[in-house]
Length: 403
Image (cartoon, rainbow, N blue to C red; front, top):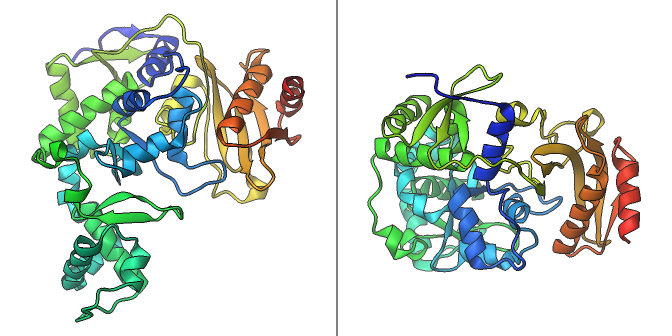
């Protein structure tokens, strides 16, 4: 396999931004078709339970489309015919439902399942059958409902909450039950696949493992634009050997082209549909779990931006803050802000703001405009800035000019 053409880091960065949807103008009014376009492009939205700003899976659409009605996302994931279903894609994620058959290999292989659910299946297989029967009869149900509202026939029913939850997690991993959505407390609503999957997907046989990896690596390559094998593997958390085999097959068919990126010590692959924009004029705040930045080594290589989430770091040891969002301006990540939605006071709080060395002079003004827009989207009346970080004072001044 030849090394292929050479790309500068700037070229690779712009290709990546275009592939992720940051070269398209934001629509005047976001509609379902715009949501579908982003779903098609990315393939999933990672879910995280932290809600200090808003749920993590809400933000990637906002970053690419601007303010949108959250009901568009909720309808796509919780009403028939669903465009998104929850599964273990990267981590827990809202997955493009059309990719469901490609994850059959994961559902069949319980070796990747963590200890509790796997153990409960080994020790109490009858429990899985009973829980499945209950969900089929009464779903959609939360784990608490399965535990606290057992059916009238209690024969051999008793278990504690952890056993019920572990049984549900096993059934969810294997696809015997699915998430029909989540309730207001962000609990999964478990139901059976025939009531969750659209018929057009439900009737498609699962792909075999080799074809599944080709489909998923192809999707990752299109979503990333240009990427190393490691990046392609990380996108859907695939195993090394089948990923490598899929890359080789996609190179052989011409879908991927080997390239060298200046300064990178590993070969990369350019997708055949990748666009090479001459400039990128983006402006977006990014979730820590956005596909543009969730592979931290790639983020550092492409953007010169070292990024670590500090949620689990003791407060006194945090460098930038608890829930820090990178700020994309043009084709660079130029700043980072620690944000908190104070819903009781109606305030978007900027707990810290830091600029990168390469940040342009208008960074504070552009970030201020983006924060005002985000605050409005979140239903918050104003934005306040705490004086932490070298960008805090300029940002506060820029926000004062917008009042």
